[in-house]
Image (cartoon, rainbow, N blue to C red; front, top):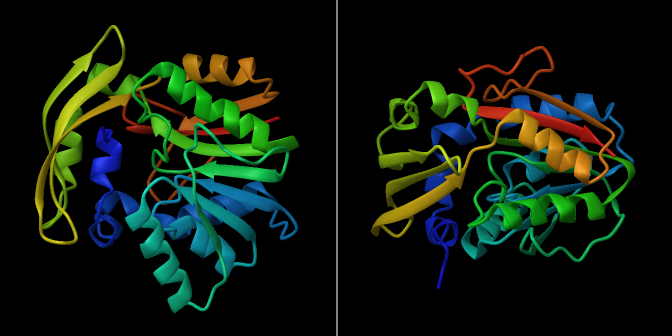
Length: 253
């Protein structure tokens, strides 16, 4: 049986590129470049690359990037976009819980919930982080964003998501946030690229900063910094608060 995140990204690539939360690519890549000191010799793995927005932009800027995703339609769209820009990029279909790489990359990025924290169980989410620890070289860096558990303790997730909706975007309803598991159960209504209307039951895990720190320490990351994640404007100056829907994590092995 397909999981909800597989259903969402079936034939939902062109529309995905028009969603409000995908519009921050340039600023996010500026931040990533700064974090790696503009070193063009490093190898980057983009996990949950989707339609390739960060992979393509970083490749355009001269970096060597491999993009992986679970969705065929997202990968097809990524390849089309790369081809249109005459870029040769290695896009591959892999599950982030089971990666074939080992000690190969200097940087792993996972932006906009690229796998973590969408999995059905906490153990599966942890598997993604374990795989990242394995693919990184010693001193390798991980930059990712994930859902900030402090936000739903203070706000309605539904109000935030629907306040940013434009015509044709996905809408979110029937939220119930479980305080015991920090999982948000909700319904997404969307129309895919083929015009099919879909109603999908979602289940996402929110994390608090201390959990993320503990998980990464368990995997022997030496430094772990957590900030607020502002769309298209990542910065080490943004202290994480209850107003941040996402948090930005930068960890070094």
